[in-house]
Image (cartoon, rainbow, N blue to C red; front, side, top):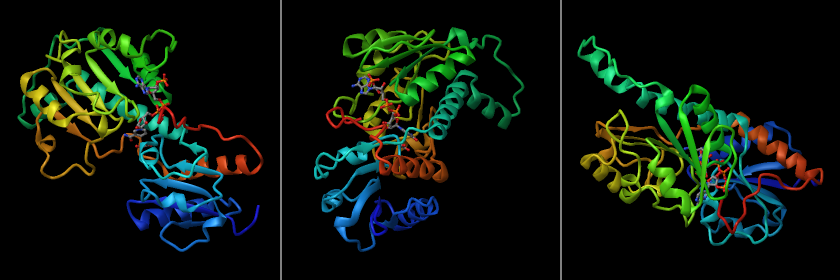
Length: 321
Ligand code: NDP
Ligand code: OXD
């Protein structure tokens, strides 16, 4: 390892965030220089890039990269760059801190709908003392998780522990104890037709873009106690047709939606989703990353690569996730 070898933090949103990630990685003592992409660097010395919404085309300047790291679990913000240096492994975050945070969010929002928390919030504001004697038990509620990867599988298992009747859908067949699984386009309709609460933890790829539309909502189970299917999306905003969600809520094809991700982020002030009474908005923080945990993970993977280890948690560029 040469001490002038460099890790570049390509955080596109703000220079401040790039600088704070660079500081966090420096504190981990990787033995390499760490600097934000906004500072001048000798491109030939850059061995690693740590990226979040980097300026497209900017990574092509580095001819000697050993790996590109995503600062998150998703990599759509990287694979959408048509000028990535070819043949460089792309590594994403797979870390229990992120996984647990996502499952917390999923459980919170499934339970929030299941136990009608917003109704009781309103009752409290109106001083109404009234309960619902027909509140179903978790076992009577069918939850479907779209995407059974690292995050979806963990959330599905934890929903199952609470008692929900859980199923999942993925690209390739999966076996999860006690969870009914469906795979591929051929089994999508069967999965949807049993799903009362739909949790989406899919990556954004050319195959999944726009998948959450009115046609799909119409195929969900419409027999739930809550008066219609519920959509909970923490995958990516590009999966969803927001006009379609609003139309489905108006016509009753959907009963409610909780959205953490949006077609445009931050969600514009003008979006009707902000004040729709059946929509809950969270600011893309379902699995809000702990800088420390992610920096530990990346520093650990760099140490593993520097010791001659093979890249782990890599993304298959042909699948885009
Ligand atoms: P994984 O790659 O581990 O899992 C992706 C899952 O989606 C897999 O089960 C995969 O199927 C399935 N899938 C992909 N394409 C298709 C398809 N065309 N049809 C059916 N199933 C498909 O990803 P993670 O679980 O780690 O993360 C999922 C996504 O969550 C990320 O890509 C990111 O967009 C989002 N995310 C959001 C966060 C937030 O804060 N809102 C935080 C972190 C991630 P198979 O198993 O067969 O490969
Ligand atoms: C991620 C995210 O992909 O936070 O990790 O969205």
